[in-house]
Length: 244
Image 1 (cartoon, helix red, strand yellow):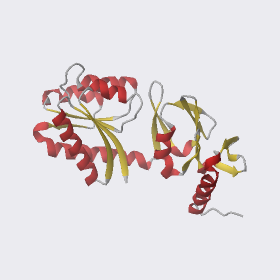
Image 2 (cartoon, rainbow, N blue to C red):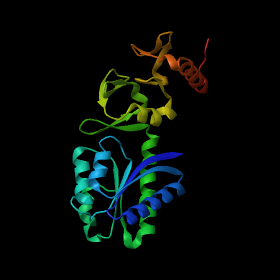
Image 3 (tube, rainbow, N blue to C red):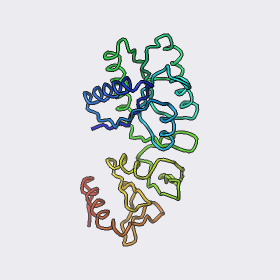
Image 4 (cartoon, rainbow, N blue to C red):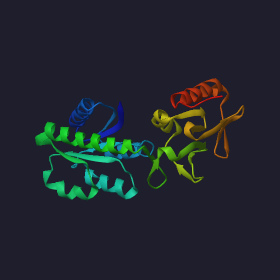
C-alpha cells in the first residue's frame, strides 16, 4: 500500500482537522495510507520540516503573519520538492499561487469535490514517480532525487548521511537512516549495522567481516549477523539466484 507523510496547516484548528480528515479519507479511497500532522502555525510546520520530509502539505492561504503563498514560495526557493495543495476561501488568489506549481486549489465553498480531485491528482503523480524507482532526500540546501537502483549503500557519518552511488560518486544528505531504511526496504535494502544501509542488488560477496559492495567492505553489526545473512539469502532466493 502507498504510504505518504502529509502535513496540514490552517490557523483555525477546526478547519485544519476537517482538512486532515478529508485528505486522509480520499487517500484511503485510492489505496493509500497517510501519516497526518496538523498545525495551526506556519512557523511550527517550518521547524518540523527542518527534520522531516513531507510528501504533501495542504495549506490555508490567509493566515496571520506569513501566509500560505509566502510559505510556499519559501519552500520552492529553498528547493523543497514537497507537493502543495492550497485549501482556502481566497479564490481571488488562485492565479497568484500558480507560479509555485501547486497540485491543486481546494475551494472551501466546493470542499468535497475539489479535495477529491486534488488528492486524485496527487496520488496519480506519485504513482508515476514510484514506477521510476526514485527517492527524494533532503540535502543541505535542496532536495535531491536519486535513482534507487543506483544507490549501493548509505553510511551514517556523524550527523551526516553519505549516499554511496554505484558509479563511485557520493552525496551527503540530511534524511535520517531510519527514514531511508523504512522507505527503501521494499526495494531490497537492509539495515546491516546502525551506521549502514545496504542495497543487496550491489553486494558482490558476503564474508565473515561483512558485505562487499563494489570495492568497499560494509560491516555487519554484531547483533545483526544472523538477521542480515538470512535477509540476504531470502533476497537471492526471491531473485531466483543460483547458490553453490
